[in-house]
Image (cartoon, rainbow, N blue to C red; front, side, top):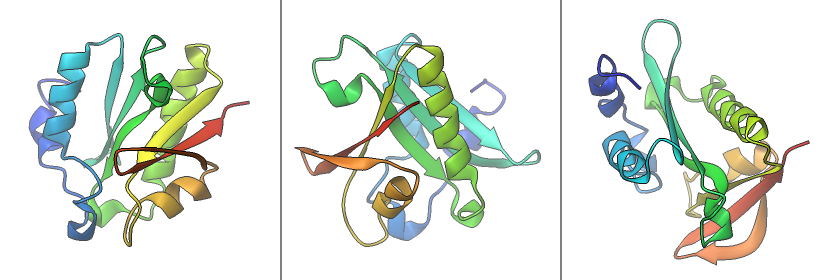
Length: 144
């Protein structure tokens, strides 16, 4: 994220059917700012020409809630770029950063429902832990 691309990031929109499942990028950027650069890891990704997605990892080993210690806090892929591997790329980038930080487990939370991200995350290897936080299922993937 840079001052040059923040407007493009804030213009990123997921498919309308998915809007209830993920917060907009501008909210994520506010949360990243509040959490600080040692904890929040916001990244914008492009296809070389235009912004196609946003991902924010969270790395807070001291978090009271275990699910927030090392995980994907947000993933938005623009509606017209979905299904092309960008989401998989973003998850792999967060996993690589987690490994770099010495972590061996990555979490993600999702709201269950039609058009939701559960199938995407389980297809990448995340498994529900059985824990639910609010209305969100906690998923985990072990990094080897």
